Image 1 (spheres, rainbow, N blue to C red):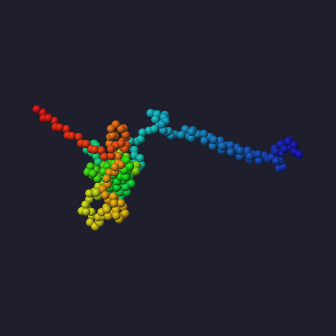
Image 2 (cartoon, rainbow, N blue to C red; image 1 turned 135 degrees about the vertical axis):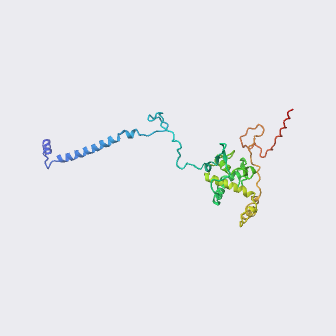
Image 3 (cartoon, one colour; image 1 turned 30 degrees about the horizontal axis):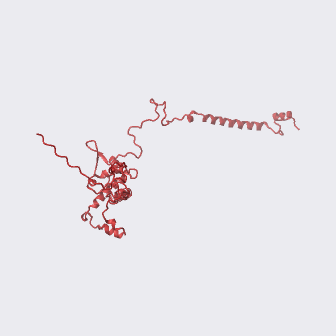
Length: 281
């Protein structure tokens, strides 16, 4: 049995029968030093201040980089986001700047009207407008029968006299009890609906002479019979008795805008004309 002194001597002498060799010891030590060096390099690289102090501006925080100590900077003048140039202002607003500086509506469309445009306008009108204005635009839609204020009659002389872009402007900003529909209708769809409204107005007072040659004219009653629709489908629409108009509340009863306490068809009184002032003597 080898003694401690003999093992130590064999390691130093690098004897073949020794369990520990100087070459193996050197090999293991070299690998350890290599790994230690790599770890030290990685550690030193990870401790750089570029990772901890990132060169960026955090919103609502100050900074010493700018003289006013504000991290948020103003946008460059005339900067426009991608896809938001909106160079054709009439297409996106429906108004132009008049000679007096005020906005003016125009009786024109920003693009040619085709049958595809009218069909698109009819589709969007039937989806978003008919609940209040009805399919024929007389303001007696289904929602009126459920207590909502009657919508504007698009067939009366006031609406027919309004410029075409007025409908676009109302759909964009709303009017009275009508909310805006800019979220539901893209600008091109709003123009298509405006074009269809004008066509709908023309159709209600059209005559056979307005129909192009070769086009067959059908009565609404015949279409109702063919489609097995009720007879009332072809009759004039009347304001239902359940409709509620936003008139002042009765007496002292404090009711909000369209509460049932308001009369469905109040009497309209026209004030007497003031007498003419006496002639100066």
